[in-house]
Image (cartoon, rainbow, N blue to C red; front, side):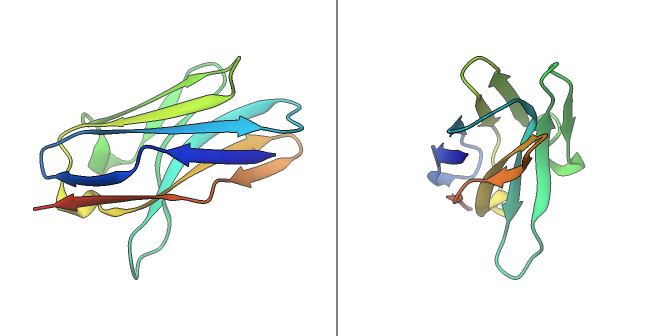
Length: 114
């Protein structure tokens, strides 16, 4: 299973970015998909997750600013990030959970300038 992320980049504080992640390969059934992030010197943390049924979960610091969505048929998940802050700067990783295991993308850099 391969996860390919795109959409990262450099943006000014208050701006927006949209991350995409597409899963391909021998996928039996993907349950939850999500986005994590890791800033320099920090632990990787969950940003947002979404189940196959559409239930979502967000870390408190992004509630009201970020929106996660997915297309089950395309095994694709998106993260719409609005009102970005400098503290959102990190490498963002997509992940997917299935009965066969947990898979990770290679990460995409998001840099927010203040």
